[in-house]
Length: 323
Image (cartoon, rainbow, N blue to C red):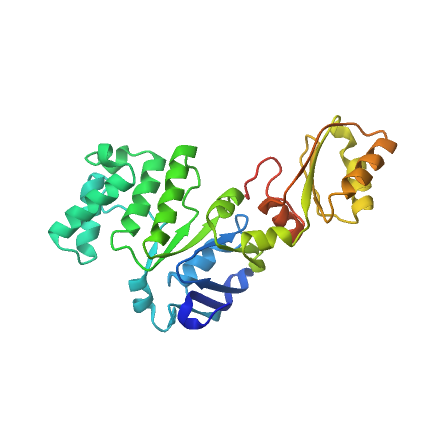
């Protein structure tokens, strides 16, 4: 997918073991320069551990990785000069204001006093923190802290930015602001490697996606390529009686010859379809069994349908969120 010179990240066979747990079990990644690259998977899949190895925060137990051609084990200091990492709280002192903390970060990164003041002001405005700029961090909400974390990692806007679940727990408005900022980072020259447990986030932002499950990459490609790989559509059904769930699953599995069916205890089912014409066969099978449905829709494939087809288990029992 490209030579080493046009890759921001190249990882081959990355392994990390904690005791008897192979948290990362042979991960390969190729992240093109100037892209937003999504790493998608449930909690515990190995996403954060992979990021920590790429960012020189953890030493790999196997495999290799390069950032802009620099080996993360042999040249960690050079790699750290090229990256920004969010996920750690960006504060020197909880009693200092957001403006003071950003100023200090600027000075620590080698900016002059004037440059640090100017950059702090720019970032406070960009992240909608100007009104709270003089308040001490201990008075900030979780969403404000998350925005400040990202602002601090961008003081010297590095060529590669690791964002580890940057919008988890944010309200919809703040989340949308964060998405716009992430897009702006790439427009102004950075590469972004983004881990997320939100399927719609990867769909909205990522140029390419790696799906990680149980420490391994189970699929990689553009969002559209991954969606098209599982068929033409997804069938969503809602049963009139959740007690019919097991019988419905058996019928659908038999008709479609698949076990990749996402279900909820309330009787909602999502099934990937190779061909939209298969819907009639499913409905006839359910009718013959006397199983009533209250709602049905046929939709274009989604990333959660991709995840279900690839791993055999869904995003979550009730939400479009991997957990």
